[in-house]
Length: 331
Image 1 (spheres, helix red, strand yellow):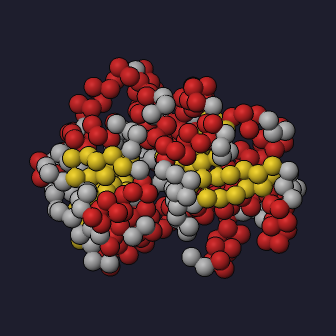
Image 2 (image 1 turned 180 degrees about the vertical axis):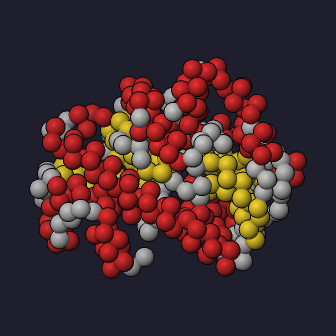
């Protein structure tokens, strides 16, 4: 994406954005700097949302806070980034909820396939009382505070080198799953495939070299990371859509003045809204580009896949509790 196009996009999303030169001066003169790690590449919606967050924080803090963004897994995979925020090596990261369940197993309920009725249902849980209670417990356990959890991601589909229409036909397909989130091993095993846990920065080379035959990602992650050049079929499993969590070191956050705390939270919320709108607006277009690149789009009856994972729900009900499951279902 060109610098000009990015500037137009971000300017349109922000209500007030300082001139670029002024922001650069603010970053250089900042009293404190937030190092923000991403696994998203430059140009992906998460990275563009992070750029808006940077603009809002730097322009709103009058030079008190600067933001440095490290995209593309420069500071490690999801597990490393989560740990780096917890120990204060960096101040922030933005990653899928999947990895956080390694620290608080009950968060795995948010990773379950076919959990959400629709995106409004997910948003009510993630930004409402149920999510706030879960994320407070996560903060107490890890030292990572969750900023507004409204960074929705695209619908996850399966990109594979082999066509499979049912769980039985999935047998033998090796699929990359998020490292550090064993629930995905259970879910994909139930759906018939052979899960291979890998950090995201290793996923492309793994598919390129045949270590895995498939990945499961939203359209922007498939297209912007070039996976569509490796896979032959996009199997429309529609097994999950989810929310990224912006994490900030709680000690760092609590050390900020109340006005800067509010600025950081408000900036994250506004950037998350922009990022979500961008994801949903671009999703259909990107699926079209994937198809135009030679990938066959395969419509599926998702009901057999939905039923295949029900035993995984029952197996893990004791970890998160039936009450929590019912609260989420009723939200």
